Length: 247
DNA sequence: AACGCCGCCAACCGCCTGCAA
DNA sequence: CTTGCAGGCGGTTGGCGGCGT
Image (cartoon, rainbow, N blue to C red; front, side, top):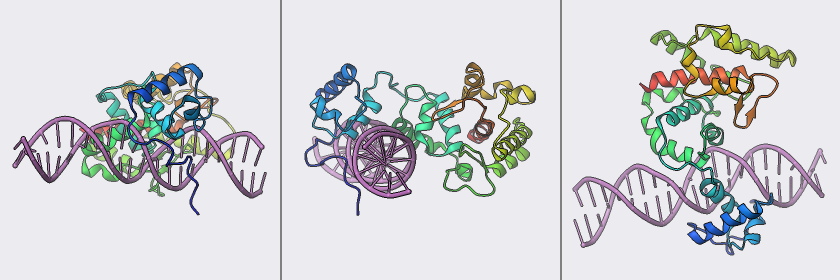
């Protein structure tokens, strides 16, 4: 038995939005908000559209903070890094890019970045579907290609200090297993001077972490009382790794 | 000029998740 | 605890425009 549709497809308009429809939707949301109910919104606004279609149109196109135009090299780097780290979690990736939507990021990846990907790098790109014992799995569902990074470290003399990952990984596992002893807010960078300070500059994660007083905002994964070493270290490692391969 | 191919991207589809009843 | 609904999300599609022949 299939799922019932969210609206009667025969009674709603589909296809591209007209400027008039955009104006109606924009005005309605700016004057009344979404009302917390997208399904009811088109009826209230006088639109013959499915509620989901209205939501998508607003989020991907009409929102005032939408950033239009091409992606910068820095944005490309962030997308590539995060994709290597967490796979196709486009909403999470988009949350790291001011004014970009998940649809934007997804389209950009599929049409541009995926083609730039070196073929030999294909095995290094993790999705959450191919995690295995050879990958490091963190509590935040981030999978790190340990062997790939390890091997790359050995063969390419990358300046990434992998030892810091081991320390942080063990701390993370210990904490999650014992369900106690929250992390203090000491940056791993402060504990290990061998990691270049500029390693975070592109992704801005370390800066964000400092700015937030040790709180890491990773889209939907807001860490509050404790620092998510696993996720951050995973991002750093993969960022370095993907940057090396990118060259 | 006409046609076909291809890339881009807006929009749709359907599954998953969270939450309220 | 179960069920149903709405929102959120990622995968996919289809239309359009640019470009080459």
